[in-house]
View 1 (tube, rainbow, N blue to C red):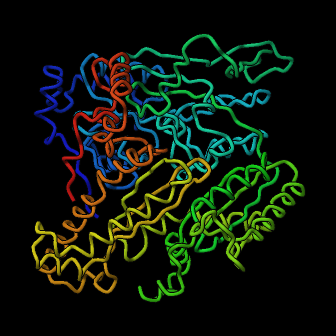
View 2 (view 1 turned 90 degrees about the vertical axis):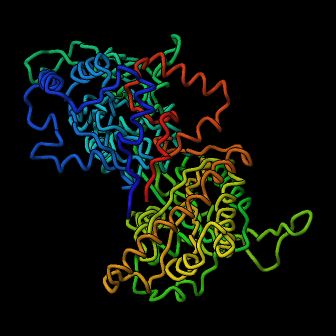
View 3 (view 1 turned 180 degrees about the vertical axis):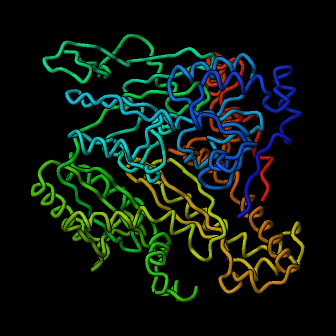
Amino acid sequence: MNSFFLTKSFYLHQFRQRFGKRWFSSSLIESHLTSFQKILGCKEGSILLSDSAKSDELIKYNQDWTKKYFGKSRIVLKPSSTEEVSEVLAYCQKHSIGVVPQGGNTSLVGGAIALYDEDVIVSLERMNKIIYHDSVGGILTCEAGCILQDLESYLHEHTYCTLPYDLGAKGSCQIGGNIATNAGGLRLVRYGNLHGLVLGLEVVLPNGQILRQNMISVTTPSDKTNETGSGSQTIHTSLRKDNTGYDLKQLFIGSEGTLGIITKVSIHTPPAPLSQNVTLLTLNSEARIQDIADIFLDSKKRLNEILSAFEFWDDDCHALVDHYLNPSSSKDQVNQEKGRNPNQKYILIETMGSYEAHDDEKLLNFLEEQMQLPLITATTSPPTAVPDKTMVEDGVMAKDLSEVKQLWSRRELIPLAAGSHPETIVVLKYDLSLPQIYMYEPIVQTRQRLEQWWENLDKDSSIQSNDVAALKAYFLVPRAIGFGHFGDGNIHLNVLLRKRIRNSDDSVLNPEQLTRQKELTSLYKQLVLAVIEPWVYDQIYLQWQGSISAEHGIGIQKTSYLPSIKSSIEFEMMQALKKIFDPNEIMNRGKLFPFPSPSSSREY
């Protein structure tokens, strides 16, 4: 797969105009490196250079999670304390050196890569200490570089609590990056988003100042002697209530590293559930999105306090996961389509509680009620029940935790199954938020738009006729699939750019044919992208008053669209805040805000 290259060359002229003499036009000179070495000490691996023996290690810092975006930073700094971060930022501000904060680098929108050769990546991976868990308050305090899975394991082993959110990238992502992007995840319907869960933050501002809000560290007498021989202990926690003016930490949640670097976190950790179960519902192919909304409303009423997740996906997603789990079951494209109903939808409902027998009984009763509900048709006014048809065609409830994991895998494997299918060239990902009753409309309309475009490809005067024939021979109409967190109105629209499997063996092509195929692949990608963007963003905002980013953030990918979906006063206030916190504009340049525009540098 080719990539989007984001290098200094495209932006240099505009960037010099904007930043004038502050532009750091040469490579990092020895005086700067010497200063960074003094700040970080002589700890092995604290500085990575592009011309060192470990230059290959820079790839993982310059390449984003999707492998679509590549940065060009030649230096990575790895501080191990807040004080070191503070000194680094103070120095960078003084010398107008761009800073790219980076956690696990799991962004899906290029939010943590360096746009310019001269940008310094500040990786938080060494700041991974778990500082304290306040068992009475249920509050975890840790450094921002802690990996989400490690925190979950610690809480499971040492406390009665759990993290209030779960992400697919939990084995790699860091809590500081999660907060900087306001990550959502699978259980937002139960616990809410990070704006309500984060209780305190420590943030290093661009000028090196350290802001600590609601981060308490108190040493108190103790009747136990600690490992230092002292009879005292230090408690690190946060207040659950603090109504003393502006809640400044909220500005950094979702700021994408443009206002400062989060170095420590204090987060609410609810009691871990003592029981967990899942049910998977297969809906009638004639069921409407309104019917899913009705089932969700019913689940909130019937399951109430134990409802923890409400996910849904379409039959295209289901078929992709089937193929991923058992690729030999579908030998060709024709057989893959047999017996499928593209209008079928699936719902996964998870419950978590404290009394297994009680919780399972509630879920079983709910499942039985849903299985008996009649299918409602909207073709009559008022809508009426369809004789001998039920809303839910099939339903299964997990018997044990192994079946819980098995049913969850049907949902969690969708992105992997989509990207690894033999037809798939690349997957375009759109993370959208809109009212639940419209949630599937973006998929329906995108699918229609792509099919119409493909059918009328020969009428496009901008494409040569021989290219049209070749495109039809090599590729398939792109497939739009939909899945997401129905409980919080977040739909993931994925567009699969597909090739014909019988033409996928590149080894049989001679060099001339291979070059031709690469040219066609590049053309195919560019054409599909032009069909979808900016149309999909315009539709989300203008037609449904939705959001172009529910949980992935803006990053590089959506900067040019931000001004059009924010009111002028919103956007001006955002820019004003950026100017207050980062007047020299050193923090994560080119992210969130549209200048300089990275979209023009896309190369396939």
